[in-house]
Amino acid sequence: MWKKMDRRAALGGMAAWAGAWALPARAQRESGRLVLGQSAAFSGPAAQLGTQMNRGARLVLDAVNAQGGVNGQTLELRTLDDGYEPARCKANTERFIDEGVFALFGYVGTPTTLAAMPVLQEAKVPLFAPFTGAGALREPFSRQVFHLRASYDDETALIVKQLTSLDLRRVAVFRQNDSYGQAGLDGVRKALAAKGLEPVAVATVERNSAEVGAAVKALMAARPDAVVQVSAYRSCAAFIREARAAGFGGTFYNVSFVGTQALADELGKDGRGVVISQVMPFPYSNSTPVVREYLEALKASGNGDKPNYSSLEGFLAAKVLVDGLRRAGGKASREGLITGLESIQNQDYGGFRVTFGPRDHVGSHFVELSMLTETGSVRR
Image (tube, rainbow, N blue to C red):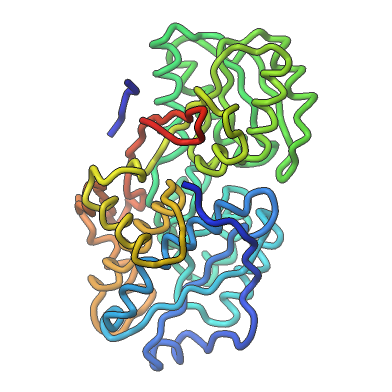
């Protein structure tokens, strides 16, 4: 039904890593261990995103370590909670680098990752697969940063294509009041402008807030056919409920960062008909080899986690990172990891293709649409 371009993860707060900290990078390599650092939201209104991505990645890393690691070196993923706040993410990154982590992995969010960029670039520490599609993290090009997912421009282009094909031309935007929300708004504007349109209204919500009353009032006054949402799951769910209570009968579209299963959990039966753009394969059926592998790993883990897009993204990110390390060969170095990743050319990871290059660190442009149902499930 939906045009294509190309359940519930366990909740719970994850505390910052406690106890002994990492040895310097050289000592890590000599001891046969490579330490990866992940700053993400493990508490607060965006906690499901960090938790899910981390757990998906650990499915791969634990399996690799059980088989002896990569080139004789085991992989350790350490976490620090930033609560989806930029200043905390920057401080976490400084701490990771001071303690000598080998590379950074799976950061979650645009404003947080942007805050960390100057720190990691100065230290020349690679960052792989941040959970964000913002153009500001892709241009200008950074040799240290590799993106696995499609951009917000890719996602919003597909959303606008779908809307206009349904003759829904009065499009409003509800966005987070930060660099993430701005990136999504820019993408919507660009896609609408190509069709001679512009948003009929724009309203904002503060990061980590669900105070959406003013935004609902502002957007409903513009009588939109549809609302594109560029925020996290809790504020988007609050907006949907309040807008519907105010009589809005139109359609809601979200970009992937919202957290599909988290949004479905928040909305329950109120999620029926909400559309979300996705940058990962559909994780609820074994129609592709990588999803079959992922579902088997989830079941084998025995921890009761359910499949979801964010967890699958962590799983795929870890698979590609491990491949990059294997391609680097010998004793791992940061430069070797970069070179190894850049050698990945049109590689098929079980139905998800990835291509990098010396001047192209965006691995995929895959996007498709999914829809929530009143039972809390997701369908394509």
